[in-house]
Length: 152
Image (cartoon, rainbow, N blue to C red; front, side, top):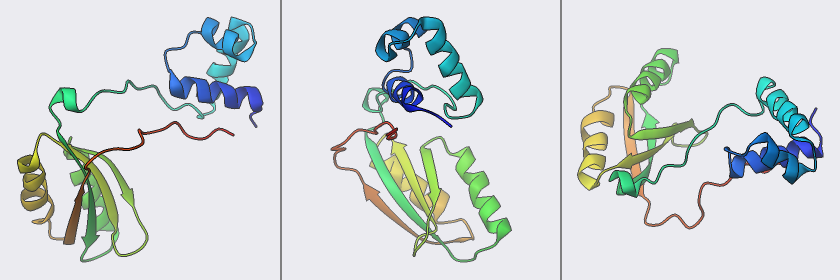
C-alpha cells in the first residue's frame, strides 16, 4: 500500500528521473535518507520499473511516426508467438498492444521517412502468413506529449 507521499514521489520521478535524494527530500518535505528509502521501496515493490531518457526522434532523423493496426487472419498461440517474435526484431516498432475489436494489434513506429514506413508495411508486415490486414495512421503532429501516469 502506498500513501500520498509515495504518490508524490512517483509523480516527481516521472517528471525528472534524475532527482537526487536531496532533491526529493526537499520536494516531499523529508530528509534525503527518508526520500531515498521510499524511492528504493517503490523500486523493490515494482512501482518503479526503470528509468529512461527522453530522446528527440527528429534529432535522430526519425521524421515519421505512425500507428499501425494489424488484423490477423488466424488466431492461436503459435500465431501470437510468431508475431511477437517479429515485433522484438524490429527496432522501428517502439510499442505494441493487443486490442479488442477488429484489429488485433496496435503498433507505434518511428521511421526515417515514408519509404521506411512503406518498407515496414509492404515488406515486413504484409508478407507474414498470419497477417490479414494492415492499416497505418501517420502522425501529423503530437498535440500532447507522452505524459506521466496519474498518481492521484
